[in-house]
Length: 433
Image (cartoon, rainbow, N blue to C red; front, side, top):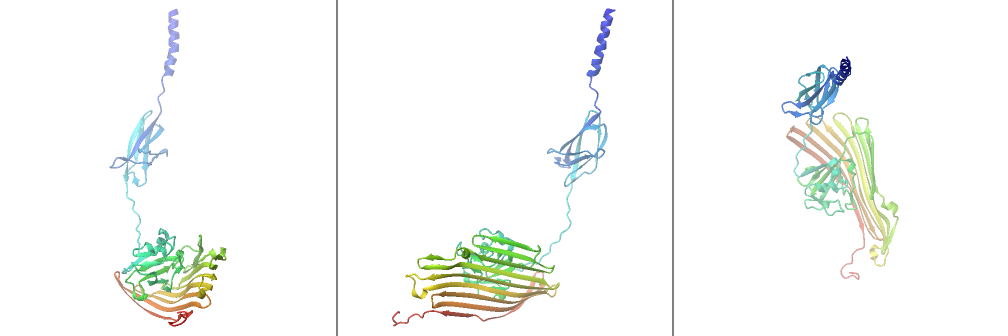
């Protein structure tokens, strides 16, 4: 009896331990899978996988793998998506309790078709010897400091005399052999003090055409090369201002719209060393007015209708300095005040017309004036005032996409004058000869 009791107690304590020591079977499972590109068997990274029934989402890793855990047993529908891929059909997976269901999902790569874009433009007429730089290119030319005319030395066969001058030497010719135009208005010499900086703001330049040879009859025959400069003839940004300050000068730009049919701009520049230094003495005298320069450009345009556009431009530039020479070593003819001044003025009114799809007209009436004044001592001086008036009409008729006829007419006259004074050199036999 005692032995039976002991066995009963052992069975009583052993049975619960056996029951509680066994692990209850899991009621959930998981889905583990990989997303591949169809045909290539390459993993698709960062693909989005979604279970439709639960809206659970997962993103594939760098191996294209994903995992959903703790899913109740049952049947699930999975979708997958990725940029430039599509899933041919949904994938159905069955989850068993305590099991891992492995899947391979294949995505089909698709070609992205963009809507058709049509780009049209006017083909530039090929011209022998012409090279062009756009306004955006001018700003990026290394070493030009954003100067419009200095940037031209980046073109073949165009150079400068030295690093301190921007005056252009084209195909071996002198800088004085070049002819300059700004918006169809002739410019005498578009530099300050012989080439330190050009007298036109780079902010307003649309493009510059350089004719190193073979230019048209509209430019005449008395020059080695032609530099034809065009400013912008539209404004798409509305009112805008810009200011630039450096050690040599300050410049500013104002521009805006005239309703929806027109535009305007004003650009100006001035050096300011003379504002800080009034005078400076040296052995033979003193500088009474330090070198200074200034320039401005003003332009406005308006579309009268679909066929006619009217524009007006005005610009000017000036350089000056003054000395007083009174040293003992100064020649008597130059003793006293010495002054220098030069500059130009220009203006033009232009009418651009498109009579038909083939016939266009460009009519301009311009005035330019080169001014020069040098005085040395009481008797030596040279004053030049050379206004020039031009009426220019260009007609263009397009025969076909490859051929066009160009003709035109230019009427011009100049009322310039040059006045000089000085001591007459002694003739042979005279005391001072």
